[in-house]
Image 1 (cartoon, helix red, strand yellow):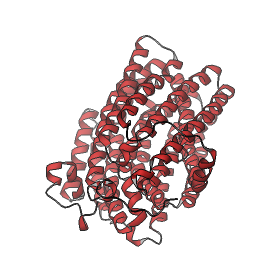
Image 2: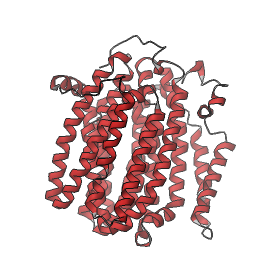
Image 3: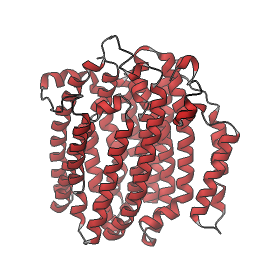
Image 4: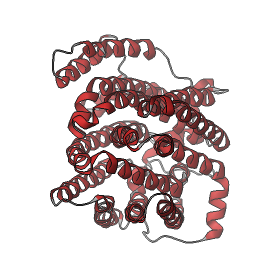
Length: 498
């Protein structure tokens, strides 16, 4: 869809060498802010799951899984493709696209919300259906806020986006704790996103007022042209939405309520953390999209650096989850959720793999190979479904964890092969892989230190992992750009690329 345009480099950050350092610093800020919010969420999650119990925790997980599917299907990849299109256009041409996207997103969210509410009514209960409907209202408000903040994303002004994300998490935590203290039932917890979303929509509107028009446009004719171009990617996102939530929904029919609960609590914990790889990789996506449009050498350089960071961080996350799983489950669920410890440890492998998977997924999207993305997404959906159906009857919640993690590892290999086939200039250096494997093996040594507290084992594991990474000089030097006074005294890379 993108037309060939001339960019004003003095006003469009994506065209300059400053984009890379800005993305690195912005990505670091987003991850830091998100971790702060996630730590606060651990406190509220601990109170929430203890308050609800195992079976209601399973119902809570089912409701959120349905709403998450609506969120993914109502977006249908529109935001991601919209960012790609807007990144490849001059600033003045971007905002009509954003208004069309907002109108379409509102319409699809309303339709999807109606469908899943009726499904929850028929498949589960009227009370759960009411909770799903409340959560869908909050989803609509969040979708509106996300669209409003597109100018901040494209200008790589990620500090404000970090502040909004952190505010969402902290408001949610505060309301969750308040509801636990007054002894609320399940339904009010599913409606927390409504007051949170309403406040943040207003704040976002104030931040970008004057830079874009906030009103949506409802033009089926323009929607048809836009969606028609990206229809294969639309179906791919739909498949991905089912892929990430399919395990918990299939478990409802393949296992009992306790096994669903043992899977739901670790799933919910890691679902909070799945945004971290999206933040790490997503900060560079506008740069990927611009480079894919007019400079594949720059795209290859950017992909290589992000790939290295993602491999290192993903491996560290997987190791840390394996070490810290007993502590995490103890804090969040208590002793009655002890069988969920190995479930969380296995799911951590899939979370680590997701860091690398998203690098290749963003590369494919930047290149605009929508049909190939569709084929891969449907294939991975089928692989995940087959693995879940095969393993859950044998191993319950642990079987579902093995299935989802194995499917994520397969996705990494398939997506990488798709990006690199016929594009040798995009091939990253693989020198980090053996060193990261060594760091992971060393980082797992504290698993044998059963005589010391888990938190001490976690600290020792992180020190060992980080030590190997630095001794072997595996850490990309470009990450020093997150420290402004250092970044100003070194070059970003070949020919000043970012």
